[in-house]
Image 1: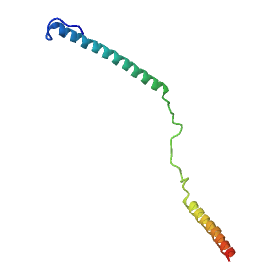
Image 2 (image 1 turned 135 degrees about the vertical axis):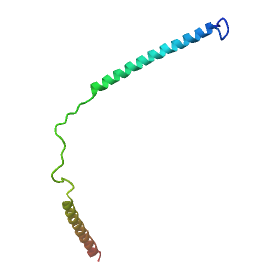
Image 3 (image 1 turned 90 degrees about the vertical axis):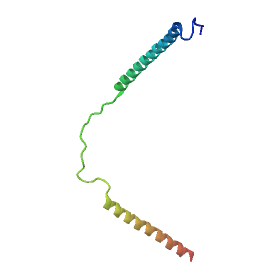
Image 4 (image 1 turned 90 degrees about the horizontal axis):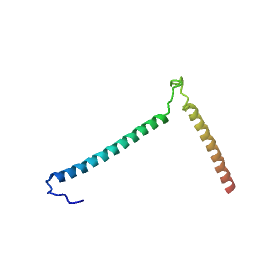
Length: 100
């Protein structure tokens, strides 16, 4: 920066400092304007891309529970358990018979 006539307390030094601050304020205002325009553009774009969902039918509770079917599941587990037990017991009997 060039040397200013007078001391640091002179009017010329204050004027230079004021001009620097004014330039910074102008630059900041321009940046703010650009940011605000960008924000508005982003808001407009999001409103354009937003999907609207219409309700066709209201949800309702069912008259009877469709799942889980506990009694059927319990009986199926018991039957499958007996089948596995039968197959394994026949397999063990066959192995013992061939061993002797």
